[in-house]
Image 1: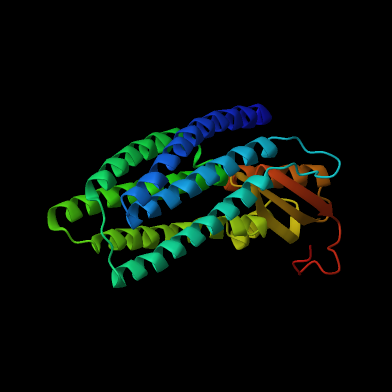
Image 2 (image 1 turned 30 degrees about the vertical axis):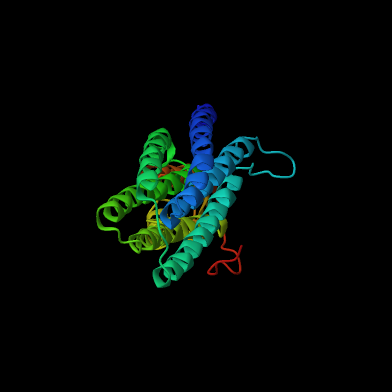
Length: 297
């Protein structure tokens, strides 16, 4: 049932990503052309984010299809972590774009350039519509896949960028202030950076097999030691191999006279019910390992 659910979810996410990618790629070409025609850095900034949207969606789509491949003799854990690599790459891509926009925005503040606000406004409104459609498509899978979350954040940032461009175009149209254009571009860059950091942090933690956010090893260890038949616990590891796939491994020292299989099942049940750890490897021992107090691999 779990495998079937994963495949169904992957197929749904793949369809959503394909539609969002087609919409984004089509509009990207028009927005790049409009940015040069109307000499708008804000439009080009938004187009740059639209480009990262398209790249993120394409990478996410490939990652889902590769990640859905079953485990084999060489990659016994399967390919799900490829999605996390894709999320990390998207975060780095966003960082680069945001920094470029900040630098170029500062340059244009020093040397303002004329902007055609009417064309800028029309293109930004169309871009906003594309972003809203894409966000709607991706919203259903963002909480279950870090890869989809990365693509969703890309589109979310671009949607805010489109709103900023619309406001900037209206201000320029009624005031004639050309410096509003780089101000909007800089604001978009500053908005994107902290959200990009969150995505990079989460994907890096998974790649480093860090303890999942919210999981406290001391509490988990205390729960296991409190299980009847357990006299000690060591070599406890809790990590995430995908955005929604927490795993754990542990050595459990049995109390005198305790039945190893009964204790193993009891510990497994408590980890499942109390901490939602569904993939657990438990090694029972009559005596602790010599380095049982350490965090050896």
